[in-house]
Length: 202
View 1 (cartoon, helix red, strand yellow):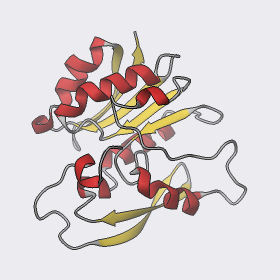
View 2: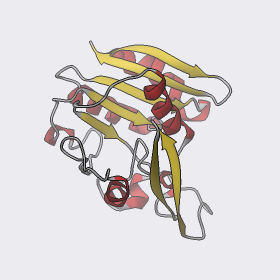
View 3: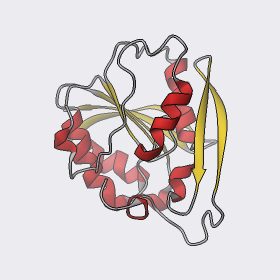
View 4: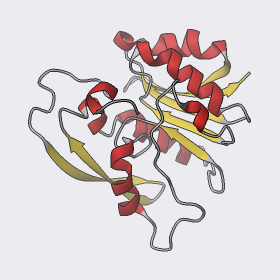
């Protein structure tokens, strides 16, 4: 990541003027996952578990998608349920480590500045995941470059997004992502305005 958190996360004046933290527990795949959320002005919108993350986890459960033994990279700027702020992930990994340990190599945290340093990351992934990362139109080309690099060896991408018109999410999925990927809408939740897309590099 480049610079401090103020340069990475969208900030709004008056958002989280008071700093506080909380631990919330979510039931996912029959497991209780505890997520530490650190609300502060420096993290802005990255402090919350967004509904799209919960929808993506539920989608995997409903589809009985077996992710065991696969190589997964998660692009995020959130709390850790699907996407997480790199500086906060270590705490959430430690809290959620199974008593028997991780079945294979445990999760690792590493900052990745989209479009800038993605080449230092492998392209040997089975899945690339992201929840509510299609948020700032100025980052879309950087995200696309990063996805292309990470998927060179055939990774499947799953992205869950709240379809915010003011943030151009639909434009990303209709115009930008299809430039390099075959894109399929795999779940639509009109009540919550959340879509889940599956993409594979062309």
